[in-house]
Image (tube, rainbow, N blue to C red; front, side, top):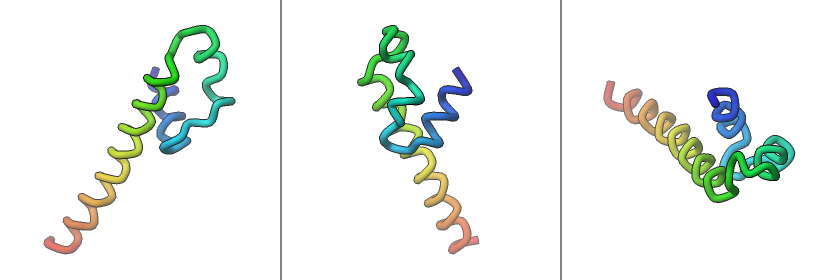
Length: 59
């Protein structure tokens, strides 16, 4: 859900277990899927910062 993606983004590369304990224990999400999404969200944030830096240097 959008709120879960926001929480993953806020948590960074390693999501806080407490935020996703219920979803993990119920099988709503797998640990692999959670960690993959966390990595992707972290990469997107880092890439956006890099893009902004490059734009400021050339623009």
